[in-house]
Image (cartoon, protein in one colour):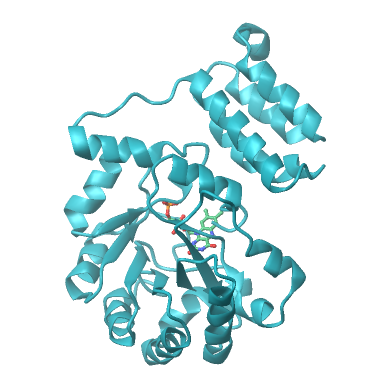
Length: 312
Ligand SMILES: Cc1cc2nc3c(=O)[nH]c(=O)nc-3n(C[C@H](O)[C@H](O)[C@H](O)COP(=O)(O)O)c2cc1C
């Protein structure tokens, strides 16, 4: 998830039971131009392997060169091609989900990327451009033919953005058509939803995005459910606050105490602080935090016994 899936969060997801984590998408063009900000995004954190790096773009040569450069850094376990981003600034030039409008071009691009690297190559796509253009089963076949290792499919069209529900019926069709493993994605935010994704689509794995925000435990809760048939209780308030504190510490560590670290944390911390009296008040206060010290104090307060005062 762009803006969220940075190294500290990826490491926490691994600790929370994720088998593989995917980094925020980076522009292939920017990688090829060795853009400093983009290269910063290619750093990783001990403890977050395996990690897959995701690139976006529409020029096959640039995509292949970017993949090869990322491989040369030695910190990637896979290269994923973004074919799902619906944002106009990405689709306008023809990248992201816009690639789904030309399956033959997708095949040629993927063949070129696969030839450029030894790492496994995968794609992350929407079901299609819009409801009249559901091409994910065809694209999965093209990906298999090009030598991709797996396909990851969000069960909505690009035009849908995040409206409605993920279409499990289309995901089942992708699974039936695909010569390579399929990861089903969309609306998996609980152990029961993960089971439904597996049962109704026959997919080989599930991808979780929003459901992991403020909730990196979701992966182990799903695995435990599949192992035992019992759903572990939701994390308690104290566990959530401890999770938020851990996330903050991880971020300070990774960004070497950057004085603006708290800024990137706001979107995450509001997700930890849910489901308890006073949580809404805390979330509001997170928005007004202006320093790392203030953020640390707020987390300490949340951890204190005095929940009544916070709720006031
Ligand atoms: C804020 C945000 C950023 C996202 N960034 C990316 C991205 O960089 N690459 C990608 O493949 N998908 C991205 N996605 C899509 C998610 O990976 C996922 O497909 C979508 O949210 C549906 O899954 P979910 O219901 O588990 O959230 C993003 C989603 C959100 C909400």
